[in-house]
Image (cartoon, rainbow, N blue to C red):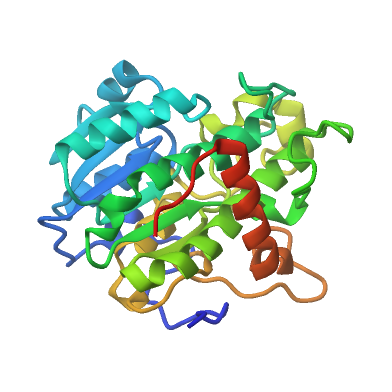
Length: 321
């Protein structure tokens, strides 16, 4: 049954942190896999999961850097080399994970790039769509047997309020027949992340696998590496003195919603929804808010199914029943 896209009663909110949402939870015996779990909000996701007792596997494009950044995180952390723009790297990472565990109770697809100049992978695929969506699509397909084996697994797909920019074209995902725009490309990738969760939840519910899409909030992280300070000032992220917008979240606060979706007992039996501020998000009203809310296109089940078929064709990877 489709979960309504409407807020529920949650004790957490905008300023909750990842550690706060796992307080009192016991994740002992649970194994989680987090992509990009060594940068930005990823580090705080890993810190919270290990604090609650989970064994956490981290997919990292730079394993040495990941080891440095996670050195002070307590608990059980293991690092796996993973380049989401390289299909061979994805397959190798998934095979290595499968050699070390027979179950994954949590997968958080967190790694991303944002608003970068036009670049293409070796297949000719536009880099934001290839990395943020197709890479996670292939990775999840390879990890699918481990998720099904966990008996109640959850997958969290980190999307963004950037989905409001849309840009999604199932017919032209690589900007081969339209002018490239870095923000439309980002909006396309983040819309795809949300639609992926919608469709995966539909396919996974029979196996006890539930999926959630997440907007973490505005956060200063390395994700902004491709933006100039002038661009960020123009968008209101910084003021003229270079001070960050006070409405931005800290990385620990930004990590909270993904962690909440992965662990909260309040979400038992639910899935397929887009969440923000440690709650199920509300559909946008009129006029729509700038930094929150769910735009209708990411709730379009027909679009989610079409994107799924396109993703299988582009990656050559299919999910096994």
